[in-house]
Length: 157
Ligand code: ADP
Ligand code: MG
Image (cartoon, rainbow, N blue to C red; front, side, top):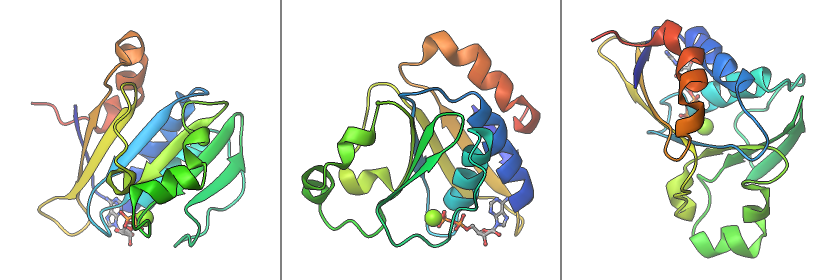
């Protein structure tokens, strides 16, 4: 489904609403160019998952864990040079486990899980406009709840 926001605050609010629907084991892949708004969305997701502390930006670690209502693992794989590094560092253990994993630049590790929330953010026509394409492969049973969470920002076609 396609959503649209017109400010960083709106993207944060969308993230927060989606974050409230996250459950342990969930994986959220955030794709899009540098400056698209992945980190803005990730911060919203963290809020929605009950993370109370500020998330630093930019992150210089590949994965930063947070504790919310569930564990929340924020990955930023921009600086990952090789998918092997991801597995050698044991980072795959934080995917599909006790918490929710939110991953910026998932392609850097070649991540393509069967079940995930897949998000692609791109710039719109105006400066602060963003188009947010969401899909929920393998999560058909939760589609209604996930779609309802982001309904406010959905582009009605
Ligand atoms: P990324 O993590 O994708 O590299 P960031 O989230 O760090 O990008 O930065 C996004 C930038 O775009 C921020 O400076 C933010 O203020 C700006 N921005 C403008 N409009 C929006 C919007 N609608 N949603 C998200 N960010 C926006
Ligand atoms: Mg980022």
